[in-house]
Length: 555
Image (cartoon, rainbow, N blue to C red; front, top):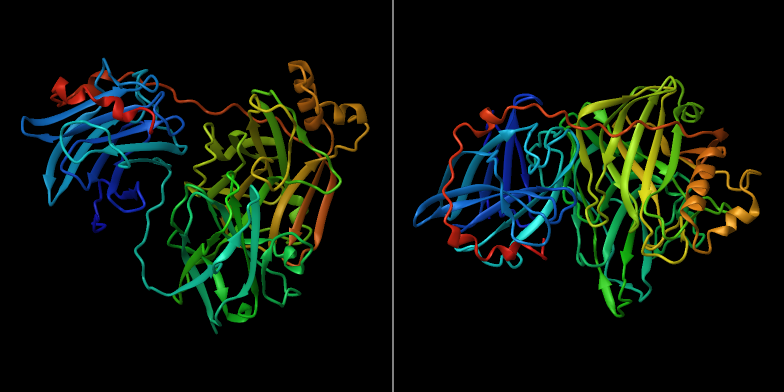
């Protein structure tokens, strides 16, 4: 296992790419127009591969591979065109700075320009990027077996992590519950934490996953004061705990440990020591297996050393409303849905509304989701994106640090746009809880915390513009024109907006609307080929790469 987090002023950021802490990436950069330097430390003395992928797979990936063999150092820049052997780039855009082995580890330090002008490279932007890695036990490139993986990281907008200051944690887990044979199951446990007489701050949330193949996501909610009795049973059966909706912590499949910034923590204890919390776990059981039990949940590490800010989580987007039909049609290559939040409805509960400093986001759809964008509007004009994933992956849902703080002011608007692909479906897709249903949500992590549980919307599908024949016409296979018209109507009708406070009180506005969202920013290439090639050092033994099919289907 890799050890230590030694301070390096030139590469202050660090992320383990695997759950066992065998693959460590460090990096740093001076500015967004210059170079970015990486140090990859892998627990092997064999070959090492690292790259950037548009979607977590091989096709379109930008890859470097290297190691220290009997013939010396080898290191080169590659690209993958599909599930086949990666091809060596005509332009070697990566500069090898050092490569050595020590204590059973291979340590590679290399550099490239952030804005590459090589079409065979993946651009590094200020948005999350999917990193891929693989390695072998020897310098003969062969099938990597389980020694590979992917992780989404925001390289250019990353927050420095702190080390653990204590081993004190609260446990929010289920205890050997039986997962039924249904494809989708939600289990809820309403609980009281051990008493903390004074206010503390949660600074790190760690998932405890017993069955990675079944646990899809987990949410921990704070309950309103009228929820006073614990229980442990299926969710959403009309129990009083259904009113627990203020998100305290969240985890999605593919995510890992999340540590809050050094100046902020999630408040717990003190005058709120009698508060109950609801743990919600979504189990995905596509094979409808029987007889399986689970004890998954969350560990919440806390400290008595209070930080400057209390952290809150604001769910925004599109959520299913009772008696409101919303069907995503089948055979649609790109179908857009929208959820909006105008902070003026929050101001009915919190006035004046303080500036909300957003520092991280968790984006969430189900299987049909392909893109999620979160627009930020002020005075009727879009000023930024609060979240952006142009290659959304259902299997990689993790909280992403934005790095630079985004400020939501009173009167600002938030719009969440989700793009779905239903070309492989023959029936409509509903908005709902099942894995085969859909959601369109963005969980915004911010400070200072306010007593608001959510701010979401739903198009008024009972509006006269939505004739009954049109609302039900998508149960059959629609034409492209019908799909476009239906999407346009859902966007054009009034959007019913709703905010909910900690005591489950509602504030609503029935005439909201969806503003136009700007195009996703793109990288402007700056031609600096000479500097990107300067000092490039690589030695390639062609025999080493004859078995590169190892990188194919398993990535």
